[in-house]
Image (cartoon, rainbow, N blue to C red):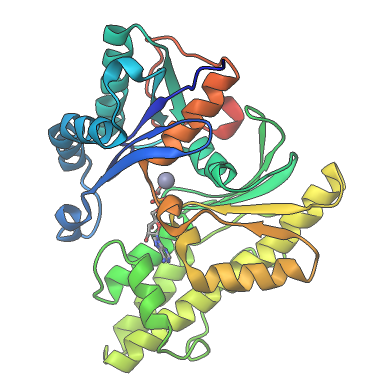
Length: 341
Ligand code: KG4
Ligand code: ZN
């Protein structure tokens, strides 16, 4: 009889405390405490407050998750946590919790790279073949990554300045919207004219797949400074911003596919992951673009796009199955590229 492996995963790299327990076929239980309402009044995440809130809620959430899964600590096969990249204070809270539980239960500890967790989570529901291309669009990152094995990644392109999530969030703030602004921009954009404002598309047509988004918030600021912010104007700005971001992504994607095909042969599957991947407008247009080229688009369920504990537990399970166990001395890594696993 093959014993089931249960992995408990902890996410605390930014402003969500996420706990989950998974086994090889399903999510047994998961809990998520979002600090969004706390940070909203500051217009962005305050690292010190984030760390304190993780500390305040983490033990309660672990107990609740175990209770929901009808498991006790002794049933858990390994404890995983996001060790980076992210905000140091939060990472320390998650890392110490997972390490302490591993130590007292005498079970393995697994250090998970948060970006790897975003990259792997679609495999919970979909069959994905290597090599494939990942477009990671989040609050901290905007990258094209080739996955060629569980621990083998090549970054084909990345942002030279702001991430796409920052372009959404910083522009939303200029429009007087709440943090995080991506979701709100998507809602308002449905009511606006995407062609009213012509925003810059940096790097477009350059023969690489890097991004640059910092000019967008400046362009939005210049426009906002010159206009009265009526409801219609805010909707048009949201629609024009989202449209511009889509045009940039599609152009960079075209180049990323060319780069992939040249190195690895015809691309079959593109994984779209990270918080910004929750955007239905982007998803739909990227899907149409890929369909014309016979490429399958794979996107995790909406609540698995944004940060959560399930993706950490799932990545932890994949590492455990490959016998990739980490030492309790494994340090947190505020910066941690997927090329340095
Ligand atoms: O992956 P994530 O939860 O955290 C990081 O690892 O950074 O991504 C958070 C980002 C935020 O910038 C947020 O505004 C953005 O994802 N986001 C969206 C949407 N939902 C979340 N951006 C655009 N449209 C959305 N529907
Ligand atoms: Zn994330």
